[in-house]
Length: 302
Image 1 (cartoon, helix red, strand yellow):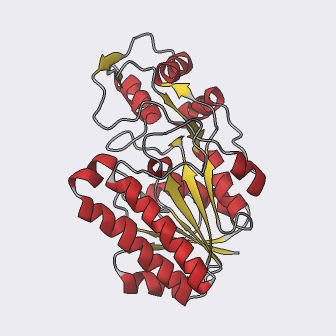
Image 2: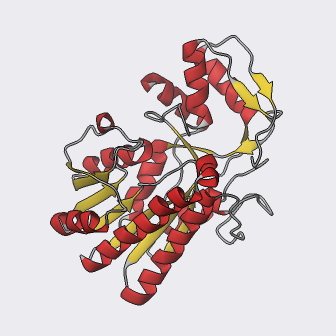
């Protein structure tokens, strides 16, 4: 099977590449290396460095590789930057994605698997958040993710291009960058490693849903032949407070200090966790690693 992974040199994309190699796929990677690193790619791939905004380049890559499936992870992922520079965010995340989807149509790709986000939901009306929850993004990033979801629906209706949308909860694991938009797990690890007191914004009782990147990669593999035309939450469906997360990381690392509490950040959602029953039914997938085990596995490779 021939599979193209956009953003395959990034945190999540590179783990998807590893999982694909494990099933013997022929893999190509398209990545601008804006945030990704070539060192993250530990498998043999056909690598193309370039920007999704270059529609002709994207088309030529897809035409040359003739993938059966495209797994689309390339994106600008900064919520704050999407508010400061919405045009740049929309350019890559929307226009770049449309270039890719159009190339997929023109080159008769069978399916596109799209990495979306819980950010499309905004502040929850109820918990856990299922796929029927109203979509009310609070940032340009969340809006851009939902816009691409709608383009995939359109191309399915007009041209029969199959797709599966995977809406991720908070992903953590090896290769996650603690700088910039790194998740709280990698930020805590990095602070402890550097001897810097970790900071918790707010009282720490806000809840999130943390899913290990290996489980995310497994969900992508399941979606290759399942879940056509579906939008699915990918999560553990288990809410965890930031205070509890910090205690788990303290126990794993042996850190003896306390966190520094700071003011809540503007726009932060108080509580968010996802219902993933549909993914269990449609993909026959569920998260394998409990948080304590996932933290331990991450620490081994930090």
